[in-house]
Amino acid sequence: MLRNSFLEGITRYWWLPLITGLVCIALGIWAICAPAQSLPVLAMAFAIGLLAVGFFDAIWGFSTVKHNPGWGWDICLAVIDIIAGIWMLTMTPAEMTLTFLYIIGIWLIFAAFNAVGLLFSASLFSTGATILATLLLIGTLFFSFWLIFNPIGLGLMAWIWIGVALLCYGTYRIALAFKLKNFRNRLS
Image (cartoon, rainbow, N blue to C red; front, side, top):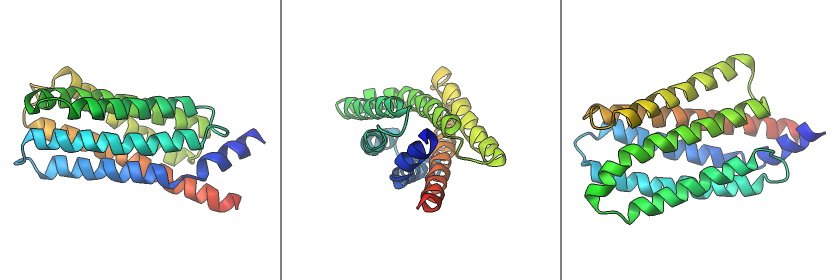
């Protein structure tokens, strides 16, 4: 009964992870395809993206309070997203550029750990899909830690690692959204 209640609650808003996944993929593609753009522009877009992702994650967390035992972690991640976005928007371009490299690494680590918790608590995916989702999240963590511990040393490669990490996380979120939608259709 608890499992059905959990699935009914989180599947109702299946489209919210889809939106966050699309935002992350868009930012990831932009990071890879626009190296000629200045880092402050990407940092500004990222700060605005964080606000958008935080907003949708907050809706997701509050919408699943009754059904998701991990809803508190979703709200925590949303608050971190919103605070980091607002904080970055109040900085000078030079401060924002340097902070961006650290913030994105830390944000992706929190997001990946939150996703791992949902992945295993919900048991939404088949064994093969769980392995693929886990690999995407491990990729997200790998590139995030690499970025945090060597942001300046990565130089121009930072664009690629930021983009790949966002693509991994965004792909996971989209897969999660469609899996939730499939469960929703089966429960109806």
